[in-house]
Structures are given as structure tokens and as C-alpha cells.
Image 1 (cartoon, one colour):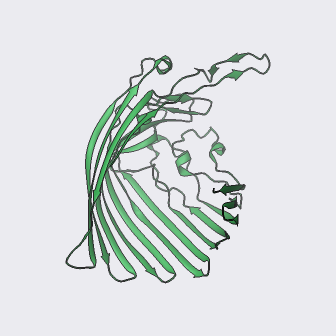
Image 2 (cartoon, rainbow, N blue to C red):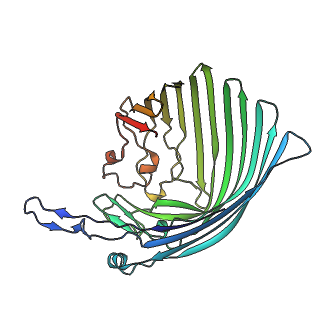
Length: 361
């Protein structure tokens, strides 16, 4: 059982100085600062979860029923700072509750092989900021508009999987399929310039929205092989997909397939690992929102190492993106609609280095 009360409070401030005259102003990008992009908001959340497991007549079968209860309430508290910068903009309150049962099953086919299945329902409340945020940042090239009609998300899903472990090798594979009602997509791109909410000159206008009917499905796999003393080879593959059923279009919120593979050595005093990450080009894109830029596939190589010169001291270092690959992450650019805005500023870091130390006492 859990209960939380959170107050979200932000303020955006700044000054602009004319280097020739020294004159200073609080008007930055045509906007008077300070301001609030969303009102001070209180969110109450309550959750309770119960689960049990029991063995059926067949000792190889274990049943795992469970249920979760959720309740939430979002209460905005507009103050003078918010009202000054957002005159006439309505704010929304929201509350709801839900019961989410699930049923899992484990089948131990052998000492090495286990199959699992699960049918589950889910519930997710919208973040307070998604309801009432309103932000226009023309210098940065984007606009976010509020959605006071945003509703909670519910889901029904099934998951099937298998796990194998024998000696120094272990692997697992999982397939999943989930149907959503009112799927919450945060910061979805609006179809600009046709949509009247779009701001002229902005790279993109975004709004958190509900997708009335959607499905997300796919598969995941992991494997590890300890092939020598201290040495381990690992690989992980994720292949997600998603569809907006009402529009019969792909969900742009879904990441492309990704593979991570590497090898590492670890002892009591030191360790090192080399990892390769490959992301496929996003081939399933809903272009009705005016999306023009789809980043190509990319592959990066990272090398990390750590050492413990003292029992209480650990020093770690790494070289990341060793090949200095220029690449973009799909979540960073999936809403950009203006091809003239220069996408290079959304690239990930090139070759870079990092060192950190941790002292435990």
C-alpha cells in the first residue's frame, strides 16, 4: 500500500542584455519573464496491491493471481504569476480510480526451462503538467499547448515467455500484446500548419493527447554466456511495435528495434566491458502530423572500465561513441516538422569521455 502527495511548482525566468548599450530587459523571445508554464499543482496518489501464488494439482504449475487498486486527484492552484502570463487560459482538475486484476502462470517444464504467461489489466493517470502546461519558446523552436480534456489510460494485455538456464548460459524471450483505451501520448506533434493550435515559425507544436484505441506489441530477448572465469558475453534485443487503431496508422511514440551486445570481464578488484548498440531506422511512421525527418539507423561502440584501489573507493571511466558516429534518437526528433530548422542540434554527443569516483563510508 502506498500514498503520496506531490506539489509541482516551476518558474521560468531570464534576462536579455544588449551588448552594445548594456540595456537589460526581461522580455526574452517576445515573452515577459518570469512566468509559469503550468499552475502550481497538487497530485494525490493512492495504490494498494495484493498478490498470492499457489501450486495446482500439477506441481509443475504455479498460479499467481493479483489485483491493484489505484486512485488519484490532480488539483491546480493558479497563482498571480501564472495568471499574469496565461490570461484567459482555463485549467483543469481531474480525479479517478480503478481496479486492475491480473493472473500469471508458471510452468516448470524442466530444471532448465520455465514457461510463463500473464493476463493483466492496467491503469495510468495523466501527469499534472500534461493537463495544463502551455509553453511557447520561439528561440528554441517549439510550442507546447495544454490539454484539459486529457483522460486516464487503461489497458488489457497478454504476455508469453520462456526462460532457460543451464550451466554458464541463460536466456529469456518474451512476447507481448496490449490493447489500450485512451493511451496517453505525451508531447504528441500536431499536424502543422493545418491545426489552428500550431504556432507560426515554430519547429513543432506539441500536445499530450489520448489515443482512443491503440495496441502495442512486440518481443524482447536476452542472453548471457559466462564462457570463462570472470568473462561474460551478453546480448539484448527489443522489437516493439504500436498502432493507432482508430486512424489505422503506426504510433510514433514507439521506438525502433534495438540490439545491444557486448563482452566484459569482472573480478573483485577491477572490470571492463565493450558494448555495441545498434538501432534500426524507424520504418513505421505516421506522417499525418507533418513529420519530415526520420533518422537513419545507427551503431555506437562504448568501452568502460572500473577499478577498486581500496575497498571503499571505486573509480570508473569510459569512452563512449568511440567511432564518433553522428546519430539521433527517435524520441528526440519524432515530432519535428520543419525541415529548415536544422536538425543537427538534436544529435547525440560524438566521441566523449567520462570519469567518476565513488567513495563509500
